[in-house]
Each structure stands twice: as structure tokens, then as C-alpha cells.
Image (cartoon, rainbow, N blue to C red; front, side, top):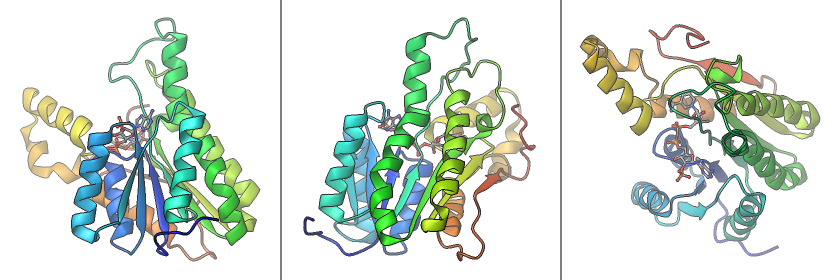
Length: 262
Ligand SMILES: NC(=O)c1ccc[n+]([C@@H]2O[C@H](COP(=O)([O-])OP(=O)(O)OC[C@H]3O[C@@H](n4cnc5c(N)ncnc54)[C@H](OP(=O)(O)O)[C@@H]3O)[C@@H](O)[C@H]2O)c1
């Protein structure tokens, strides 16, 4: 085994963007973790890592350019994480992708179905396989998968999204049933709401402005989930005592009705 530059606990955030991904990275590094940030875009990863290092100390955040649609890319990143930081204690599989405007089954190409399903499901399968051996050797580990409203029921237009998200939910249950007794706490979080991130948050704000629903902008955290508030739930799941482990939970802001998009 290589020497590790750090003895701190390690979290891998797979699908690290400026929304939930960065918020989870920050929540755990605030508690003394070092973080491996995995995504495709180098400059976004670098910016995030520089910001986390500035707040929590040099060497806290490490970037790994990864395309989750490629098994070899996932395996290679996890090899480098292990060699740089040591075994992963917490895996958060946060990547998810879909078309903004839905398309019917007949209008959805095989390439689109395959590409999104690789991000929503295959990447999680590969990442899970990369971290499980070390977690099992240690007799403990946390794996948290980010779900969405579309993880529970199919919605018209989302044929290239929901099947992968359903599969991810199923994977989280299988990992739980196969490995929980060996110390692995796997959990699935159904984010049943738009998140107040750069893409969806700003889109929602513009839409409410256009539609004369400006009152929502004055009451934003009742309508959009704040990434930092969601990150608190990931930390809560990781720190649950083993006599009371949650396998799945759902979450939404006060004024978003439950499963309203189904
Ligand atoms: N945003 C919402 O409103 C919302 C609502 C409900 C559920 N969710 C769920 O929340 C999760 C995402 O959280 P977020 O929206 O806040 O996003 P985020 O954490 O800001 O970013 C996620 C990152 O995943 C990365 N990613 C996408 N495809 C990838 C690929 N092929 N390989 C490597 N990385 C990839 C993207 O970075 P690169 O492009 O640089 O690769 C993206 O920045 C998803 O599971 C989604 O289904 C989101």
C-alpha cells in the first residue's frame, strides 16, 4: 500500500458541482475530512478545491477529473485517490443528469438513454465497487446516493432519467442488504424538490419573476432546497449511531408539495 499524505478520514464526492456536491464536501471537511472531488470539468473542480483549501487548510480538497460514463475513468480516479489520500471512508454518489425539457420514449435515442443512464446508475455501480473492498476490510463505511423525485415513479418525458434513478435506488437497497451486517451504512436520499443551485435555482427564480410569482423570491427557502441544508442531512446520516441507521429518506422545502412532479 502506498504512503498516504493524510491520515484524516476521506470522503469521495462523485459528481462534485457547485450545488449539493460542494456543500457536502464543505460539510464534511468542516468536520476534519479530506475530500476527493470527482467531475469532468477541470476548471470548476480547481475553483472548488481552491475555495475549500482556503477555508479549511491547504491539501483539504483534491480534484480528480473523471467521466462517470467510462468504467476505466472511474477505476483510475479511485486508484489515484487511494494512493494520494488512503482508503475512502465515505462515498457520496451525487452525479445525476437529465434533459431539462423532457422527451417522449419515441423521441429518445439509444445514445441519450445510454449516456444519462451511465451517469445516473452505472457510475454509481462502478464507484461502489471501487470503495467497498477497503470499507469491508475496515469493517465500516458510509455510502450515500443522491436520488430525485424521479427515483420513485416515472414521469412523462423522463425516459432517459428515471430508469437510471430507479436503478440507483435499487442499488442502494442491494448494497444495504448485502453489506450492512458487515458494517456498511448505505443510504438513499430522495431530493423531492428543485435545489437552489446555479442551474435549477436560477432557472426557477427567472421563471417566477416572469410568471408574476415574485413573492416566492422573498421566501426562497420555503420553495427551493438550500444545498447547505441538504448537506446537513448527509452528515446526519453518516453520524447516525449503528443502532438506528436510516436506509432512505426524502426531503423537500415547506411549500413544495410531496412528490408534486409525479
Ligand atoms: N438540482 C436540482 O434541482 C435537483 C433536484 C432533485 C435531485 N437532484 C439530484 O442532485 C444531484 C446533483 O446535485 P446538484 O444538482 O446540486 O449538482 P452539483 O452538485 O452542483 O453538480 C453535480 C456535478 O455532477 C457532475 N457530473 C455530471 N455528469 C458527470 C459525468 N459524466 N462524469 C463526472 N461528473 C459528472 C457535473 O460536473 P461536470 O459537468 O464538470 O462533470 C456536475 O457539476 C443529482 O443526483 C440530481 O439527480 C438535483
